[in-house]
Image (cartoon, rainbow, N blue to C red; front, side):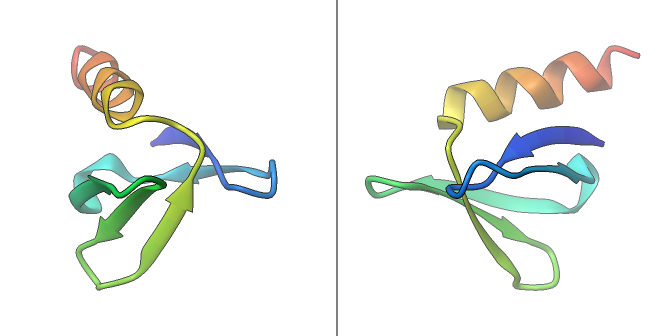
Length: 57
C-alpha cells in the first residue's frame, strides 16, 4: 500500500497492485482496476517513485 493525498488534503492508502493507469490533465488522476478514479495531489513521478520504493520491499 502507498500513501496518497486526495485534493482535500486527506491521506489515503492505495493498493499499488490495483492501479491500472495514472494520468495528468492537469490534475493527477489514478484509475484503479475496478474503474474507480482518484484525483490526488501527487504528480505522476511521485506516484511512480512511491510504487517503485514499495516494490523494493
